[in-house]
Image (cartoon, rainbow, N blue to C red; front, side, top):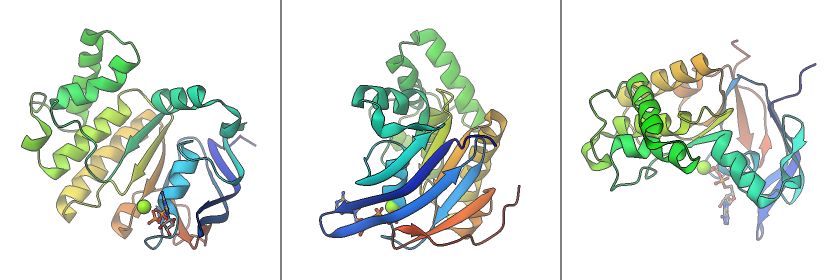
Length: 228
Ligand code: ADP
Ligand code: MG
């Protein structure tokens, strides 16, 4: 049996009196695309933050390829987030004063890739996301769907093992959402990236191999079978 890419074992997390996660178990295999659904406030974002090592659970374990993330020091965890994880959020994630090309190049520049190489790779990713010709645009000059595709390019340019997406199409109309999902899925499938995507939208979830529902801080069962 292969070791799961990521695994949450009986994780609990409270914020004051609010129990966001109440003994949650979850796992995702390498290359699997899993949609996380469930009502607002059920714990989806908290789960994602725990899986990504941004938040530490109060109890339970999060394992990345069998290694407990909490056992790594903060420096190592932050390196992990920078080199092995990619993140896409609902909005407000692009740096407003930088062009699309610079926004996508940044993670590589932070990783000490030379500017010329970083920009070359950023151009390739912008093109893959249907954004050729938009390299010099500022975020304010992009549509919502284009901005989200730049964010996906930026998340994918470092070739992450896991892409975490928290309602990436939540602020888009349905046509733009479908376009973003199609391009995102095409890129992650071709790279073999593991994806955890939080969504409210059943159509978005339909792109996934599998979906899980979070209710009251636990996984409450799947809506559809594995479509793999
Ligand atoms: P979802 O993403 O499913 O909407 P969240 O994981 O954001 O849910 O939140 C789960 C619960 O934890 C909610 O009751 C929320 O109010 C609470 N919560 C989440 N983050 C914080 C925080 N930083 N401080 C206080 N309460 C929080
Ligand atoms: Mg949320």
